[in-house]
Length: 372
Image (cartoon, rainbow, N blue to C red):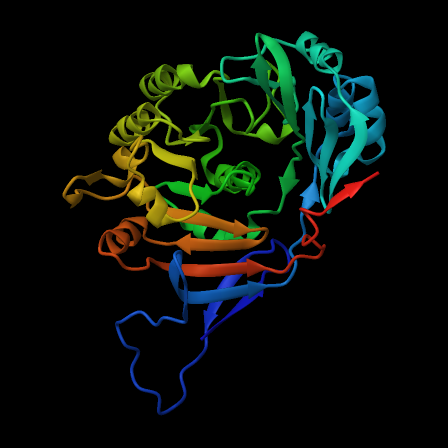
């Protein structure tokens, strides 16, 4: 049995073993299993924490800069509650949709091609259909029909401090890389930013952040203030990621290197190359479980990172520590990622530590549809 305590100053999680009874037998070498999470992990420790202090350090200027770029009638709808907005969806001929912290609201405003055309003047869309804002973390995503913008989503990002405090013990001890995993929209990038804050406390400028879509630390020449001591490498265009990663490795000798959204075999090979040159990697993967990452067969994106061949595993995973996001404040920590993939390859559930942080707010109405 274990119990979790919080350091009064830093919110640090400490897992303390319960002392054995006087006549208790000597501890056994085998791992004690508490319970199974089907399809995900075999839990060996379960740490339950009270709500943790989380601070939104986003500035008013960041939100004002975003509002100025939205179509006027969209701006009028969201301005008063912009800090609560998570995503805005605008499609020609369809109503405006806004995902707030607690609700998904469909407004009666039917957007026009002219509304969306106004977004083309705010900057140059990149090849991946994305566009950022100077000094902010917000992201525009675009689809076009016959070279005309027909669908735009806006990811309204906030800079949070405290999200990763529950993971601090592992981050402070990490010396061989980190993989953050989760499904799209699970909060990987937000958690990644705060993990980088903790890692930068000891790595400082030797931690290089290679920003695939300029979402981690912001777009443009001026970075977001959350950059702190980290070394920022803007990329913006995923097609340029491989040469930029190689350039960083060859010219700057990073101790740790961050890559958000590992999405191609070339990305994976570049990270494996960086590892061979002494750079440990912090990465995010789109996956819902270790099993799905292992069994992915089409693009084989992650194979160079989990060192799999047709016969099975051929070497250690590229990172020793893995964190899977199951929901807000719900994490699975794989303390030995190589062993975890070996267990998956053998058809077993990987061993993990379950960390649950109680939520102070209500999130169960996230998908509720309202009209207003």
